[in-house]
Length: 149
Image (cartoon, rainbow, N blue to C red; front, side, top):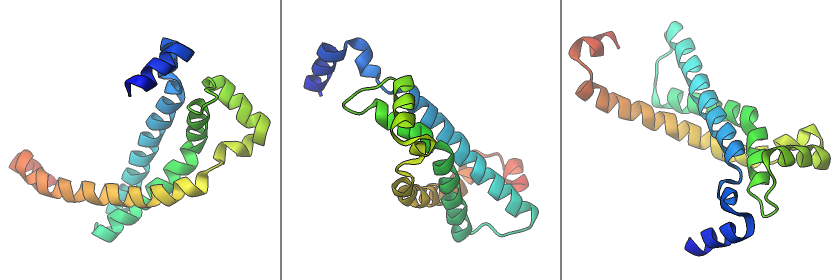
């Protein structure tokens, strides 16, 4: 790790340590917003229609949230990857080079591979979240809040 840091500092200066920060921040902030938003919209929809919340339902909702997240944030992921490559483009350079190399559809390169991961990770994430909430809520919420649940 120290060799890596020294090499980056030598070749790119202090700012080289932060290459890809803007793209990563956009990707992570967007991914979290889309993932949580989609999951909560699906869960609220199901509650209004008295659809029982089961492990399968939670997994399916998380998987759909993963799909929506991937499709919505793939351009940011592509930019981030281009910024963090050996060529080390800035965010603007990465954007321009993706358009130049592939056109607008280039922002969705790698979507299929990412979907393979996010469908399962979203399902696992929210299933585990609901299990943990079911265990922890009785321990941390006052009794009157648990009853409203």
